Length: 238
Image (cartoon, rainbow, N blue to C red):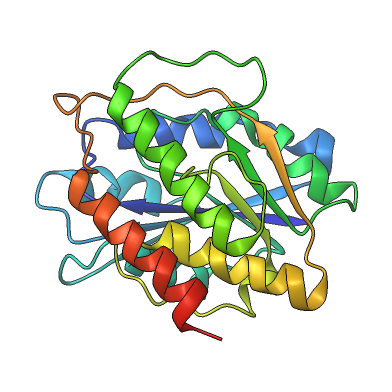
């Protein structure tokens, strides 16, 4: 089985090489999994594109670049279209999420139990960096609102770590260009759950969040957009 690790990137020169080294350092051979890494640079304006030069020469890494900044959802759309693996995993290009947890995320799919896996920052006993109360509250509120309309019992709808069988994403068209991707994809996975019995699992993961000084990008405007997307893809789309 081949795993496609999808990495959307925007202005992550500071962290990107370490993230790629960590992803490359994960030993998936005990799971019988081979790997490709699909990096999409969303028209970074720092040295991100240049820092990808050495990695682009490696056979297992494929690098793409948008000619203008379009957002995380648009970068993921490009990555999904370019991926060749039977399982697709989303990895942010910062150090908030630990690639060493890939085996944990993949196990429900590899054992035939799941079609989709979410890595939850709010279940399990893994370590978490203590940061912003209002971000935590906002994440929980958005997850609650999403759950109320999808009728799922997720604990972390906004998590980066989402893993899909390729055939699941073949059924989904990603429309949102920016952070609205998270509630959009959750609503569309929920629809597949209701209509086709798509099996969704959560596993607990660690989390080492960033401060704004360290490069965190999400703001209150993205929370407003998430609410819009929760309503749009659950109530306005059939």
